[in-house]
Length: 65
Image (spheres, rainbow, N blue to C red):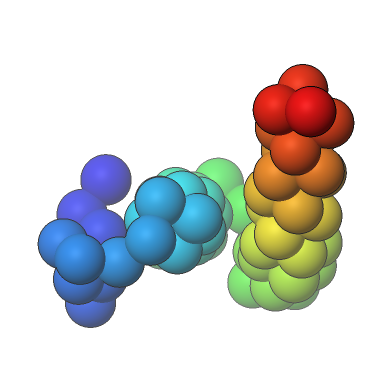
């Protein structure tokens, strides 16, 4: 994926979100999904990535103890 506008210094979390956004945009751009579907998947998917990231941090802190 292109990673448009994402800095090389961005956090891994932000890089993953950018990759997801690029993928969804590509599907919309070639007509595989409608803009409505793109918008819904974008909002849901990026929120889900945030929640998964936080869960991963919590799980990691449990194993560090």
